[in-house]
Length: 389
Ligand SMILES: Nc1ncnc2c1ncn2[C@@H]1O[C@H](COP(=O)(O)OP(=O)(O)OP(=O)(O)O)[C@@H](O)[C@H]1O
Ligand SMILES: CC(C)(CO)[C@@H](O)C(=O)[O-]
Ligand code: BAL
View (cartoon, helix red, strand yellow):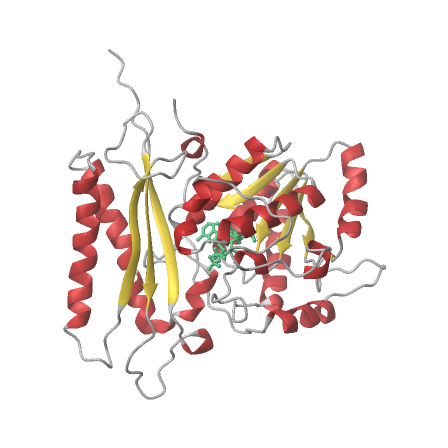
C-alpha cells in the first residue's frame, strides 16, 4: 500500500526569499491590521482589495452559511502570517480546487513552549496584506482557477480561546486535542506542547471555517501526519492536501523564522538540506536501504561542515547543533531500521543555528538580534513501484 502522505505530493515550485521589512509585536500587529483594513461597505477588506477580513467566529459563520446552501466549496490555508512564497503556493493550489479560499492568520500561543519565541515571532501584517491582494489579482487574471481568496480570518486570542489564554506548560489544564503517539516523537520530543497546540487550534479553525479542503506544507512534515491523523480519528469532513516545500535559490526551505538568521548564518543553514540530500542519494543512487548507511552519510556531511566552520576565526564562524536526523515511517513517524520499498520513508532533520559568537561591526545579525534559530526540513523517499513480472 502506498502511504497517504506520499500520494499527495505535488510538483515543487521555486520561490523567492522571505525578507520581511516591517516587524511588529503580535499586539502591535492587531492594531496595524485593523487600521490597514478599509471598511467602505460595512465589511472590512484588505486595502485595495475585495478580500474580506473576518475577526470573529460569528463573522466567519455568517460569511460561510450561503456557501453551504449554494454548494460552493471552501479551501482553508492556516498560517501564522509572515507570509512567503511557501504560503502563497498553498493558496494557489487551494484556488485551483475550491470556489473560495480562506487564509487564516493567527500566531497561536498554545503551540509555543514557555521558553520559545512567541513574543518575537515575526509579524508583518502590511506586507502580508499586500502579498495577498497581489496574489488575488493574479488568481483573478488566470482563468484556470476555480476560486480566489475570499477572506482572511484573523481572530484574536479571546475569540479562539473563549475560556482564557491557553496553557503553554506541559501540565496545563484546558480543552486540548492530543494526537499521540505521532505527536510525541521528533518535533514533539523537542517541543512537548507543540502538536497539542497545533491540533487544538486546527480543530478550532476547521470547526469555524468548515472547509471542504485544508492545505498544509510538506516543510512541516510531521505536522501533516498529525493533521491527517486528527481528521481521520475525529471523523472530520475535510480533505487534507499537502503542498510541496518551496525553497530559496540556495535550497533552504522558506520559513518565517529565516528572518532571524542574518546573512552569515543563512549561508551555513543550508547544511540541513545538504545533509538530507546526501542521505537521499545513498538511498536513490547507491540503492542502500539501511538506517546506518543513510543517516551515517547525513551525519558525516554535517560533521564536515561543522569542521570547516570550527577552523574559521570567530568573527567569520557559524556554530550549530543537530537536534535530530531521522529516518522514519511516513504514516507513523516512528524511526525505522530499514526502508520498506513498498512504504518509502521520511528523511527529516532539525538543527539549531546558535547566535553568532563574535559579531563584526555593523553586521546584520537578523531579526531580534539573531537569537538561536531552530530550522527543520525533510525529504520524502517515495515508495518504489513494484516491478511487473
Ligand atoms: N517552504 C514552505 N513550503 C511549503 N509550505 C510551507 C513552507 N513553509 C511553511 N509552509 C506551510 O505554511 C503553513 C503555515 O506555516 P507557518 O505560518 O508556520 O510558516 P512557516 O514558514 O512554517 O513558519 P515557521 O518559521 O514558524 O515554521 C504550514 O502548513 C506550513 O507547512
Ligand atoms: C498550522 C498552523 C497555522 C497552526 O497554528 C501552524 O502550525 C503553521 O503555521 O504551520
Ligand atoms: N510551521 C510550524 C509552526 C511553528 O513552528 O510553530
